[in-house]
Image 1 (tube, rainbow, N blue to C red):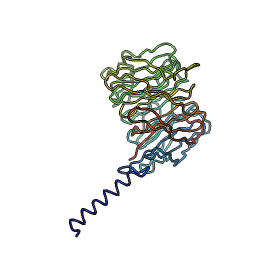
Image 2 (cartoon, one colour):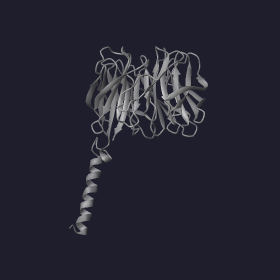
Image 3 (cartoon, rainbow, N blue to C red):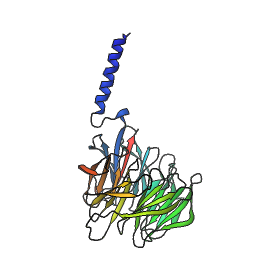
Image 4 (tube, rainbow, N blue to C red):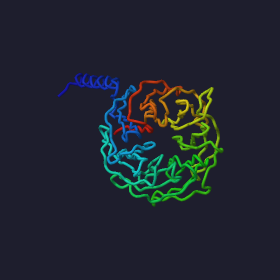
Length: 371
């Protein structure tokens, strides 16, 4: 039996050891690990990286799409809410949703099976309960809903709904009661009521939110509070802020700013938009200038203040922010690479850390912390 002085010394030693471990890059409290998944359209695979606590990325796996030969336009990804399954959309014939099991310790992917998609889908996302997969077809001018089977494989489409031109994103509201679809070519956002129990969509009243002509609404993201939504427009580079009314699903525009850097000349080609988990900072990517623009978010009004722009990978179609809100990773379709940035926790400014090779034509990034 240990004497009191020995017990105290032992506790002190354990405490010192734990404190030391937290200083080692990649070691986190509880040994939770964070992984980045990059969808590569040109090589039909997913690059898996492990993110260390200091922002370093280590490649751990390249997961290929079984039975897929032709490259697609992009490779959208979605992770189920229970963090057990990653789904990749294949945009070449036959149009498939490829499901992978995520190992809860290593983060590596194991192929489960393939399911059918209704068309070439530019965007996929699960509902908040992980029961269905939403998808949007840019070329097919449609959105679809596929049930997710218990094993994570996508079943046949249950609903396929024609839209205006160029459906691009199709995402649920924070409370899972509504689903919204951007129509880039028709300058509108369609609104659907979602019955999670039945797994069905019906048009809302009113059925759409109009935005300025030839602006090209593309991607959007909800503020973590659920009170605001931010929409990036591909064709004019606008970033619009809306007040979001959860009861009715209504969007009310409160501000319009730009993702274009100072002194921009040329044709805008904005792409992606994401917000930090704490809702303090927002980021947008622009492909003509190969830049990322940062904004500070006012928690009360939802309005944006531009922080500034930084250069990034060539043709930054996709990027994302890790669950800690400390790092941002952007991929370049024409550079076949990924650059990691540290997010300044007081200002929101981006500081380049390091770049890494990926597969061919990377277009999508998903982060996941396990367990």
